Structure formats: C-alpha cells, structure tokens
Length: 87
Image (cartoon, rainbow, N blue to C red; front, top):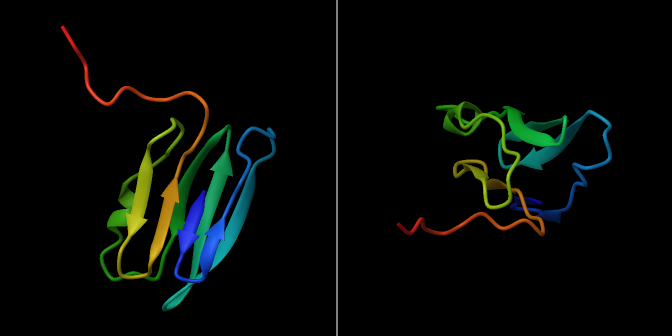
C-alpha cells in the first residue's frame, strides 16, 4: 500500500511482474520500484534521501516513509510479523 498526500494506492506485489510506479509528491515525482515481490522507493525529490536508504520491503509490516514528501509505503498481507519475541 502506498500512501501519499494525494491519497492511498494499493499495489499487488504478488503478480510476478516487475514495474516502476510514479507517485506525485509535494515537490515532484517519486518512483516506487516493485520487483520479485518486494518494493522500495527508488527515487524521491526529498533533500536527504533517507527513504531511499530504507531499501527493499517485502514482509508484512515493513514501511518506508518520506516525511518531507508525504509518502509512505507499507507492506500489508495476511502473514503477520510478530510484534515481539518471547523466550
């Protein structure tokens, strides 16, 4: 799921097709890359680029956030990741 200041977009990463998805953000265009069931912010006009350094997201619950541009990518799915580990 991609959330931007313009709304929420849903991408199906299980289709097996690799794609680049352009998202209008506050200061231009951000590019989200989907490949092999994973997603990442490939390009962003933000000043620091921390969102691009987050890298690939592939498990439910993983997120990449670009605060200056109002962009959030969150992997959602039926397989939940544990909140904590018990011993």
